[in-house]
Length: 195
Image 1: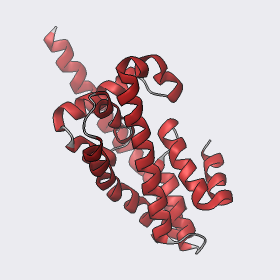
Image 2: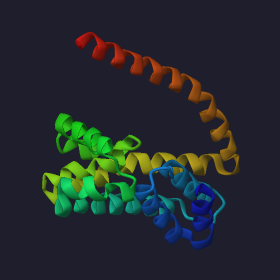
Image 3: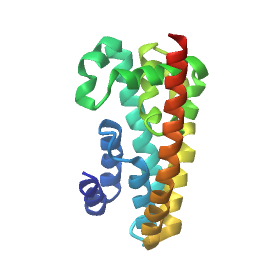
Image 4: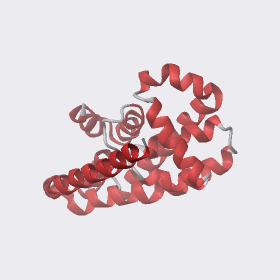
């Protein structure tokens, strides 16, 4: 799937990158970081323009957020629970996004755009609650700028040395797994203690 997305970007340029961002929102297994970094790499090779890659990534990200907002706004929670599986959306993802929204309000549209998985689903509860579209659009656009810029810039800065990024991020996996096990253990302990 990842190779298909990269081929799409290479073959169709900015349009391919935009379509890849849409696929990322629908099929979560495609990381937006990879799509954005690829745009940056192509910019370093003078195939793309840096700002063109950035704006394409930003436009794709915001476009997808608006679509997901509309699904929540017009379809509501029953639509998501019934048809979400076709878009790789699970009930627990919706609950996680709900939690973020309850905690941070409309600001969740801003900060949520910079966290994996949450960034995709945070638009749902905002749409379901029929929050003001202009505010949502503004916060989503502003919130998407740091994420988009960071990964396009990383791809641009590394250029053909992007393999180094994969090498170093793979080394980070072990500490991340350990942290997840500790967090799960803590969560399990509190659940057992309650009962």
